[in-house]
Image (cartoon, rainbow, N blue to C red; front, side, top):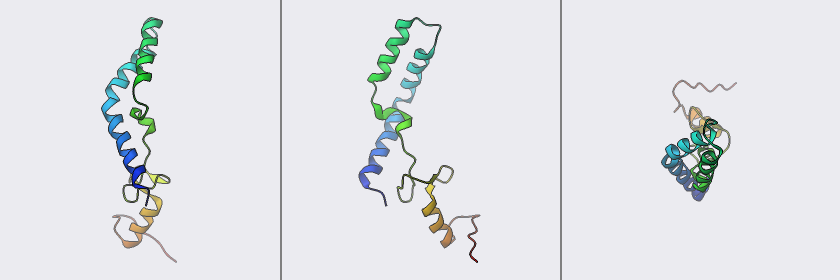
Length: 101
């Protein structure tokens, strides 16, 4: 089980990323638009840098929904390989057949 503080920090990042997504997208579009003047693009970059760092979606970490583990997480299932193995052994994952020989 991961530390509670790490899980909560990641939840906060997810919330900020969702909150600032539209503003970030607009500023990035202005900053990358080469038809605009350099001053406009530069001011957009400055405004973008003033936004909180944790509002960038790249800072959100994929974590297991069962245990909170940050590594080896399957995106489609939103769970780590260890949790998947345990639930698969118990027969709780539909369609998963765990072989043993």
